[in-house]
Image 1 (spheres, rainbow, N blue to C red):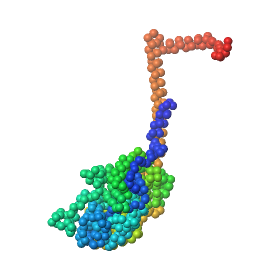
Image 2: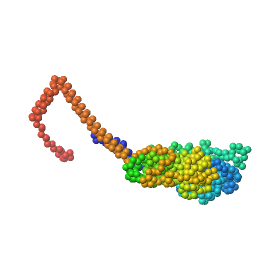
Image 3: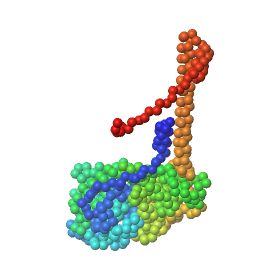
Length: 600
């Protein structure tokens, strides 16, 4: 029975969830030759590896990622850009150019292709003048936009990245800028192109170039014919100056993970360094959907009041459906530690009452919102693309609600990141004159504006609730929104008004959340008890059956020799009586034991 009980106890312990003693160590083992570098997961902002990632370096032409993002958010792609003398000739000799001459007129779209594929410095200058009037004013806009994305170690002095002692950035900041840029489908479409043809250029007459002047992308990692080709790479930018050395930004996607690798001050090893970091990221980490693993929150049991509601109330909470964490492949979801916070950032949807931030050791690895079930927020989600809540990045549900970027005048609007589907709710991007309304943002693809606040074009070319600039880059009146600027839920609040947007499809559960654990333990004890009782009953019935079989065999033998059972019992009773009266047990004999070493 002891063995049986031990077996049952082991079964019960296996049935009850157990916490691992220690999580596997964060992977290491990658090295790069460049002075600075980083590989970051784009969906959560998790830094997988960094080398001097917060040290400032000269960025060179990877600066043009930020330039392109601001231009796309500020102008219609069909606007005409006229190239001034200063835009064409105020560049360093032998620097990158697309052959555009003074007086040439190209669309914003053409200029962006020249900027991102051919790294044309004259295109950067002309676009900056088109948006802000001067390169200096545009540089101010660049610094404001970078700050809105959470950049803390950067300062930009020009739109091209040419040498300037006041023009610098960090690997971490550039990863955040690239993270925001790849949320914009227009940026990805242009940046990932291999070739393009520029029309209507003086130096490329129609007679000689009837289809336009050809330009090609300088980035080698998505060119299948190049030795540097990398499977999954889709977007990025190259850079080089005498002061900056080789710089490179590369985005690659495999499965559920999109990685951003940045190399600063490389020494002709920028492609091999990038490959090493991307291989390290894809080979050692995994992305897990939080809603498929997380079901309970211990902190909710201890804190009985949540936004004015108590645990005795029937509260249905929805877990942000598309939010994820990134952890080592050798680890499990339970190795990530959740931290519940009732302080909501500006990206939180209106029906969020708390957010769960996950860490792995000291490393932030993702987050999710807790939403009031059945109440539609501004967009039904709201996860920041960088996982920090400072850059107004992608919403987990594909759109942004109250995302928190900074307006062009240095004040905070209600968001700046582009949603995964290309649309934004309450998003604040810069206007063409370098200023923003209270909720101003990017322009719709058709140049039209609504009354809300939006920071980027939607796939169909229109924006909902947009206060973006029209074709002349001016801003319409900014509109109001019902969710509030901060998204905080006051005590006794209930989470905001139901709003438009995609419905929340999430896993619901009821408080108290430890009920499942209690029921599991009770069920295990009940199973153990039932097993013990069943075994005892089985043993007793077997003993009774065996005794009955022995009795039947004895009766059969008696009948074989001519005795009945009653006669046999009487004979045995007489035998026991006579044996008991005459039998005297023998006395015990004393026996002395000899010590084995005693001498005789």
